[in-house]
Image 1: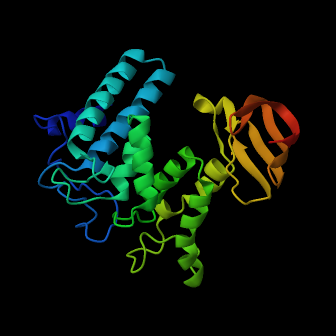
Image 2: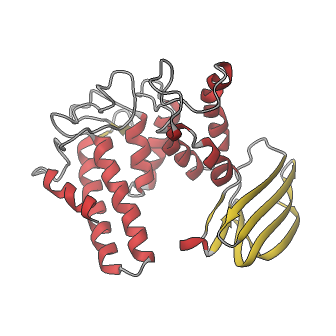
Image 3: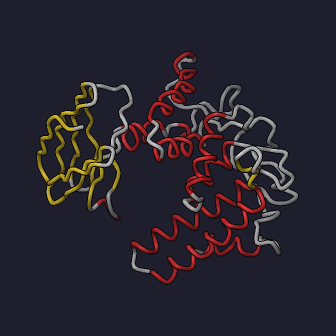
Length: 288
């Protein structure tokens, strides 16, 4: 709360973040000075402003779940206000995406990603930003760490195929004989940087789709995005035991065996169909 509140003093008369003190690192991107996005030091940058909106969104969700509706309303109001200003100032109608700077000279994947994840775009602009994200080759590209957020966008749009395609960027680790992940693409300052290990998270949370269905993991949601995978097996640690999954896919039909810990329940989500899951063994056959 104090961190979010602290950004208020860096908002200019227009309501945008401007000249925020400290190291405004966003990602290791070629052409960005020490990881700082364009115009962040001498003005406003869209990605940094969308990052604050995304923070407001997460705070809104958390405050709601812990029983602080008034604070949830505060963060939501600030998110709506800032998102409207960012869209008005940084949206490029001609190109159908967000610029990084007010002069619309710089463009990045980062601004599109954070705008989409904020949840405050209209459906039309969300679709346009996503199209630009996956098709515009002139955008500044995300490096290893920020691809976590890129994968979150791919998950939002149900595009596991794009996750698998981008995972090829990690192949260099095998070629170099590394057993830990690089900080950034070669030449890298560090050969052991945890922030590039998020494919381990996404293997379970995005491809298998196992995530908490409610606060404190009281319920479990399983929303797999298998792409071309035909057989998957996994065990995931839960506070009350193990979640075990076995899925076999033949064409568009699935057979699944899902075991949940005692005193839990959840749901399997496939396309627009929800299948309730109970504690213990759940057998689902010939489901689409």
